Structure formats: C-alpha cells, structure tokens
Length: 201
Image (tube, rainbow, N blue to C red; front, top):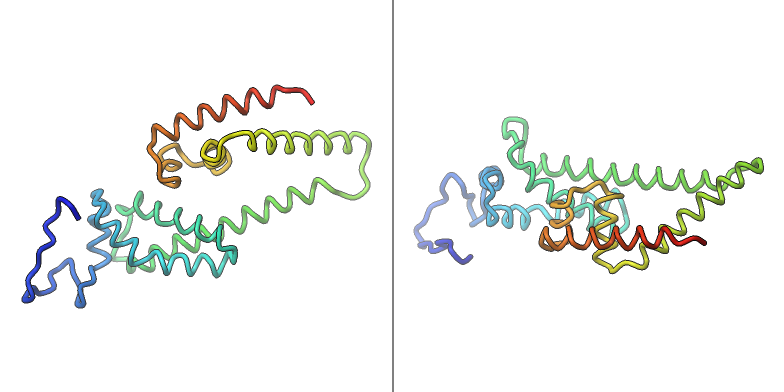
C-alpha cells in the first residue's frame, strides 16, 4: 500500500504481530485498528468478512439482509476495536458475538414489523377503529410514495438515519460516500419529503 514499507526478505521470521504462513495475528491487528490504522482494518476485514457473513446468513437466510448486517458488524468492529479485551477471548469470538447479536436484533426487528402489519388487519372493529386503520394505512402509503420521489441516495440516507437510527457518519460509512455528501442528500431529501407530505390527498 502506498506510503507503507512492505519490503521483506526470505529470512524474515514471524514477529509478535505476525503468524506463520504470512497471516497477521488478529489481536495485534485489532490493536492497530483501535489506533485508526486503515491497513490493519483491511486485513481484519479480509480475515473475518467471510465468517461473519456465513454466520449472519445462517440466522437471516436472506442474502441482501445478510450482506447489510455483515457490513454493519464490520463497521462496529472498526468503531469499537478499543473495547476488545484479549483476556476474555479471541478476536474471532468477539467479532462473531457482535455478528450474532446484530443478526438476532435484525430478526427481532423484522418480527416486530410483521406484528405491526398484522395489527392493521384485526378482527371485528368499530367505526372509529376502521377510521384509525385507514388513516394509518394512508399515512404509510403517503410516506412510501414520497420516499419513492427521492433519489436512490437520498432515500437510502434518510431511511438509515431516521428509520435505522444511524448517525450521519455511520450512514456515510455504510454507503461509502463522503460525510458532506450524506448531509446534503439527507437535507435535500427531508425538504422534498416535507413538501410531498404537505400535499393533501
């Protein structure tokens, strides 16, 4: 990588931060990640992205959601590397625990969403209940229609920030774009949503 001295000799012996076979010690890498070392994070990513995705996929089944959650896990590893305690277990075990928790959280979130959907179509209801259900359904349709009027990046940024609970820097990391771009897209998206939602049906 540019700016780094990667030259080695054939007689080089594995040091404290390396393992036999050219692989790098995950604990040593994570310590560097905690200091903001991007190259170390790339190495951690290469080692653990596959196992993380595999575990998440077993829990979620859905490939698209599994990819999304796996990325969230690795971003959390980058942000919380300093919290890793080697005395309590291996890096792999720590990361996989995060992955399992994230995947289970997603399952619970999806289950809660399904429950909310089912509540929109209950058994016998009163006239007031019907009016409330219709109003709720119309609001949901309006939000969906207005979100559909945004650009792809605006819609994704708004959903992550206001429905997913992510901070603007986290949204920027998840989408792989500059923080300033995310702030601009969310601001413009919210303005368009506001204008759209004010239109009476």
